[in-house]
Length: 209
Image 1 (cartoon, rainbow, N blue to C red):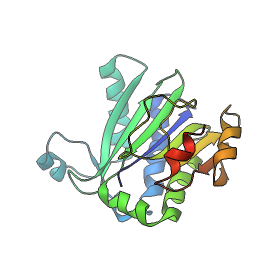
Image 2: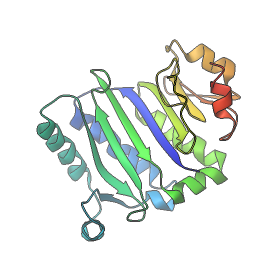
Image 3: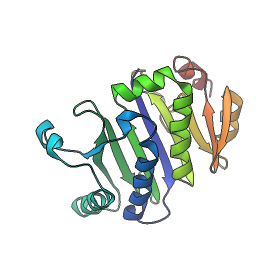
């Protein structure tokens, strides 16, 4: 299966300070799976990536700072790093003041190796979601989504990618409906992670929203 992890939260500071939380997240997930241990800069070629040293916090924060300058906007995105094998790794994406001012988001386009671990272990999927939600507080919404499942043409009421596992803040207008549809609920941070069936059945469940 092809997977994507995403989480949106209310920023507590400027993009560089939020980048420090992204660095904390990298440190926390490194021990969860071998493919998450080594993080390298996003490069223009496989050869360049091979020669690049692992990223540091200073590198990550500088990439965020420079990208904001280049975009000449408070709203911007950056893909500063990847983990795992070159050309087969998990790509990290960070977004700031998108879609709303004060929002920040993390996205991880998950590699085949990491995806296989998610396929094999729901406990691992829970840990990855819980770790992400516990760092980026106060969270707004998040999801662990299969990218190989077609998205319905009509956007869901919560205006986010539907996921097998989703985070909703307890003050979200969608929290109660998520509670009704979920097959399992796990409180974390300022809300809860909701599991909707299985990786194969969650679209059918969420279509009842």
